[in-house]
Image (cartoon, helix red, strand yellow):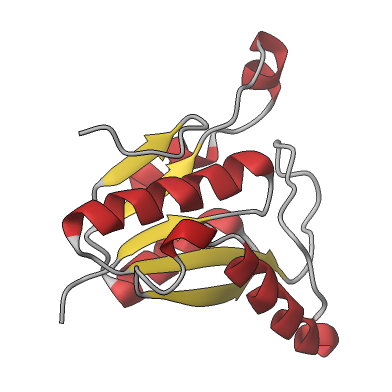
Length: 152
């Protein structure tokens, strides 16, 4: 079985643009896509970045069904049924740790992540999640900046 292309999303416009990019890339390579999102179980104080990741409580994990539907809705219509995909919901207390664990478990060909436009002040005050991920995994990482198409 071929290793999938893994893409992460936080359901923002930028995060979903990475999903579109992954599907376009996969369609050109004949690969499958694994769409992943980390659901933080609880906060541990300020982590130094603005986080839009959906949060659920341990006792409210049934909401993961609606999150799975949200993941499915991020799939570009033009690739639905044409590119094989699966979804993974990662409950973890920390985004970086959750993605690191998913990469170790699913061994993707490449991890695709989005990086939003951050102004100078945001760059000073917030962490760059893709940059931190790159330091913690042994897998190629492709970072998109809002692109939805693979040009190659």
